[in-house]
Length: 302
Ligand SMILES: *[C@@H]1O[C@H](CO)[C@@H](O)[C@H](O)[C@H]1NC(C)=O
Ligand SMILES: *[C@@H]1O[C@H](CO)[C@@H](O)[C@H](O)[C@H]1NC(C)=O
Ligand SMILES: *[C@@H]1O[C@H](CO)[C@@H](O)[C@H](O)[C@H]1NC(C)=O
Image (cartoon, rainbow, N blue to C red; front, side, top):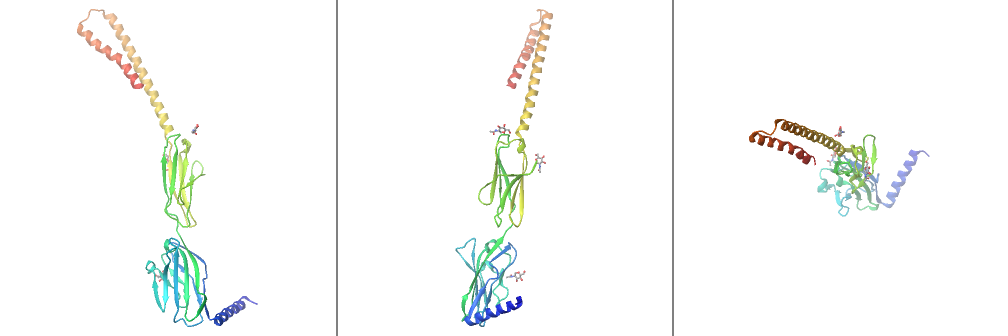
């Protein structure tokens, strides 16, 4: 028996069963539906009725994932009238009423995600299974992560790199990589689902480099970067040079002072002892100056 013949037989069987039991039947063509936030989605709900649809009544309810305890009536069709929930006005509508109970939701939001139930009644028909159920997931690309660093960039210090993402569905995976000299993945501590940090203890010059945090889910991967530069080793060698320069400078000054002292002593011995007292005072000042300079230098050096 061919496939078309089998399908015809199946349809006949369904019609016959429905007519015989006089029962309305709801069927969901899909049990889970995914949509990217902002896009439109059709939530399918088919039904088979055997009597006129003049008293058809359809109710779509939603138990949102964000608030499962408070289901809402998304949209209702009753005696030809349509009523929408205030939070969905202008965004939800039937697509094939009264022949199908499918609805379309436009500009989807995270709050639209949850369990939808489609209930169909067509009095006086009785119903075998008049309720269908489906799960709607609203997917969201990860938002741009925020990279931060905290700690001590001095060699021997420790630094914490942290990264956090505001949103993303499914929950984005967060990872940290050091990009140079070669790319390596770093061990991460998660703080909640949406932020992760890396602890680097005893930083050294080799710790410097570009670090990347990436947040990814099935929709997108987004990154932020931190450029670390450990500076203290460089600063230390600078201060070493400075100390050397100061030492040389003070030693040459002391040498100079010694030479001047020698020259003075030499001249005093040549000039003899007969001098004007005024001249002696002047030279006393000069001597004092010379004697104090090296000790001053010593003090500043210490
Ligand atoms: C949803 O969008 C479709 C296509 O843009 C449009 O035909 C339909 O009327 C919209 N539904 C509502 C309830 O605005
Ligand atoms: C820190 O790192 C330096 C070399 O990078 C090493 O000599 C030293 O022992 C380390 N200190 C500690 C406390 O691990
Ligand atoms: C990171 O910083 C270093 C030194 O400050 C600089 O030479 C390098 O170009 C920076 N790299 C990036 C990718 O910004």
